[in-house]
Image 1 (cartoon, helix red, strand yellow):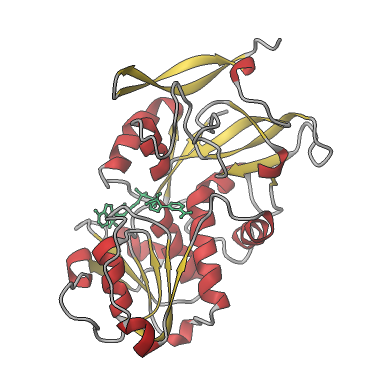
Image 2 (cartoon, rainbow, N blue to C red):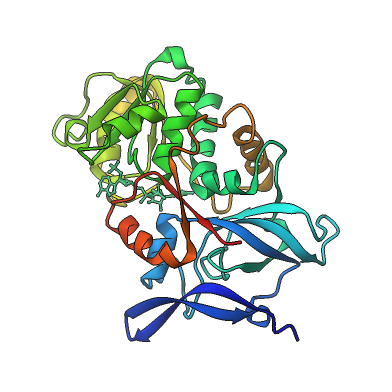
Length: 331
Ligand SMILES: NC(=O)c1ccc[n+]([C@@H]2O[C@H](COP(=O)([O-])OP(=O)(O)OC[C@H]3O[C@@H](n4cnc5c(N)ncnc54)[C@H](OP(=O)(O)O)[C@@H]3O)[C@@H](O)[C@H]2O)c1
């Protein structure tokens, strides 16, 4: 029996379909089985955590539950020879924070197959400054690079640009020399997005066009987290041979499009999943994020908050009011 207590955000169903969050003391015994026990030093906030915190059954089936798809910290105990007490590690996605107690608790216990050794060049805090958002942005950019979308091919459109994935995508692409067009719904976000390296800041309304089958060729690449009409419009405004990556649905999960951009401009639409992404490409992207892809403005786009401030920020995320990426200090 290990009755060590630790603090965690706990979401409970107070009455049918009414979910409340509070900080509670939990015991290590309550954590699920797993080979690696990690003392969490930092976590980060993601849209999925916000959905989990309001009882979205597509994310979390049963409550009480501790959300948090991201964690970095130090191994406290390990039954797996690949990890030893004292190792600095990060864990993002798989089932963490969904149906496995997540990084918004001071300890997590997870399968060894989910754990990544912290790459050289990255601190525990920087790992969470990226978190799942950075990994996802990195996976999307890796696809653009693999498909030959070089900076000289033309501008890259990033949607949801002030959000977690979007802001990191803007910063990484700018660091790599791309001309970034950042789409935002926030009237006051231009200075922030330019500070991340965006060359152009465009409004959501100016990008969305639902009538014509094809638009002027503009984008050599697209990083989209919005879906719906935003993604459909971006597809129509691509240059010949462009690559469009899609990872999110904050606007809509629907996609009403035609085959025209595909058969007349030879473009590719590539879906990105960071949750079940296999370990090899995952580690490859983490190594890039720790070195040549690490933006100088990582601090600028990150706000550090405490566990006690998480609930209010999850609400802001649900309302599309997030500004950059939030790191939660847990130790
Ligand atoms: N596939 C994967 O592996 C993966 C991984 C991580 C996240 N995701 C998904 O990617 C999406 C973004 O995640 P995130 O963590 O970056 O979320 P986030 O921090 O909440 O950012 C989303 C941004 O999208 C914009 N937005 C919000 N509502 C919108 C609407 N109705 N129409 C158009 N734009 C809207 C806002 O930016 P502006 O105000 O600047 O427009 C907002 O800040 C989510 O759907 C999430 O589930 C997927």
